[in-house]
Image (tube, rainbow, N blue to C red):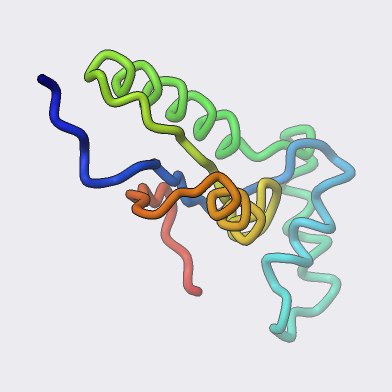
Length: 118
């Protein structure tokens, strides 16, 4: 008999990042929301993202991590769902938590992939 883990879902928590050029400025506005950051500074930071096509590597890294975790969970006979939520971009953490609630998740284990202040 395989024992059940004390949690019923895994939540991947991350910073988030733009997936295309059009996402860069809205993403950066989310990052600095509530702070007084000059618009010129946002444009400077945006240029770094534009240099790489407007894409942050963190999203693909998270997808790869989720796939690897999925394989390990399936092999360990604990096929619990994996959710992903970001602080600053889709999928937003607040939306993911609402989805988990709708799905009946009661005891999730969080795996935080990037440090950020809350």
